[in-house]
Image 1 (tube, rainbow, N blue to C red):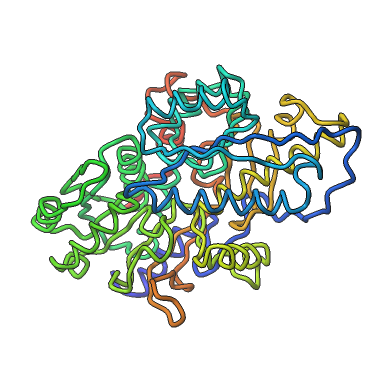
Image 2 (image 1 turned 120 degrees about the horizontal axis):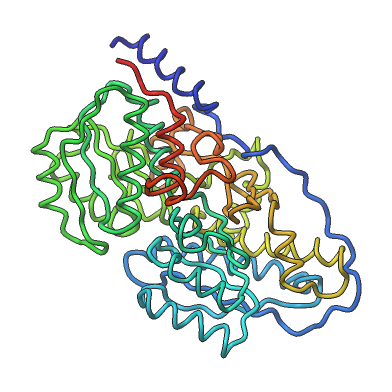
Amino acid sequence: MDKDEIQQERRGFLKQFGATVGVAGLGAAGVGTAHAAAKPKGSIPDRPIKVGHITFLTGAAELLGGPGQRGHILAMEEINAKGGLLGKRKIETIFADEAAGTDSNVKELRRMKLSEKIDLFTGVISSGNTPALGPVAEELRVLTLFNDGCTDFLFDKAVPNPKYTFRVTNIQSADGVTAAIGAATHWPKVRRIASIQPDYSYGRNVFEHFVLALGKLLPGIEVVSESWPKLGTTDFTSHITKILSAKPDLLVAGVWGGDYVAFYKQALRYGLFDKMKVATTLAFGGYPHAIGKDHPEGVLAGVHANYHFLYPSAERWPINKSFVERYHKRWNEYPSFESDGAYVALNLYKQAVEKANQLVGGWPDDDAIIAMLEGAGYDSPAGYLYIRADNHQGYKDAVTGLSKNLPGYDFPVWDSSSIVTIPIRSITAPPNWPKPGQGHNESTAAADWIKKTWPQARA
């Protein structure tokens, strides 16, 4: 396949999905317009709104949880500086460390609701935790806006008919599919695939959906190596040597946080990045400065299909420019997709409260707030976010790009000419598509939809 054929195949991939390369899109459903909040109606109490927020505050996963906490605090401080919600109710947040484990997180959510009387629950990173916490949130009737914990399983099976539970981060299957489209777009000649994934639900989901999507895009792919390190692995030597011995064209990596930092630094010593293409789902998922200048250029550096602080660009989306400036001024670092998610969750709640107040007057109850969250749109730093009413899942256009070292940054960012932006509707099952166990036995609704609707690649 010569250069012209590769370019033609690349254009074919992009056309098929309505995607773009080199330009960051602005949203799944268009661009909304920000409006000043209307004057609150009725009598508003002045007692604080109590929020519970669980995220990783220690360990390797703090690279994701820490920025999320800081995004939450920034939103809280900005809202409180204007008097609080509806100008009267300031936000007070109780934080807890997700590193305590799933059982402890469930107990902490119960304690927050029953003892601390929280009004809202946010946070959570691990896709192993949201399926455990979602049913408890429904049982306790605590309004919940998960910032992450993006497993399809949450709304496909654990909470199939949510009332109180919402999520603002792109669904997990979009991670694997986004990486597959990015890889096929940039490297359509790859056929021999190796994988290194964390050995829990996130890694299993990434691997399945990446291979499924890439198999639809590129004919004749072959998985030649699978590695499944445990979360928190510090020595990746055996996995790296296994990958190298398989001689793949492409490695897909779903390891994240401190695990990814340890992996890439060790892989450098073996020359891994010189011997194969590398596509990741979360290389740029932690705080940007966690990755050093030694990180290779030309790696597909995923951000959970969600957000990178330089995109959308300042010229195209001033909302992001302003957010990045305020976040950097407050924390002396650049925001990550977790920063965006936590910041947006509180502001989405604020928007719903304000809209509900205009309808019912006074402080709206949870039913009124929920009604304003279902089908809501929000102009986030990442672009337009839409909350589907049928499953309470947030959707925004998926994005990934190739790593590059640029002047002005002490860490790699994206090569602006390489960014692949995909309309989220092109890679996720549409509303009311059957869930697992409802006429099919696929792991996710997305997997069933891809298998049944995507055309098979032709050799």
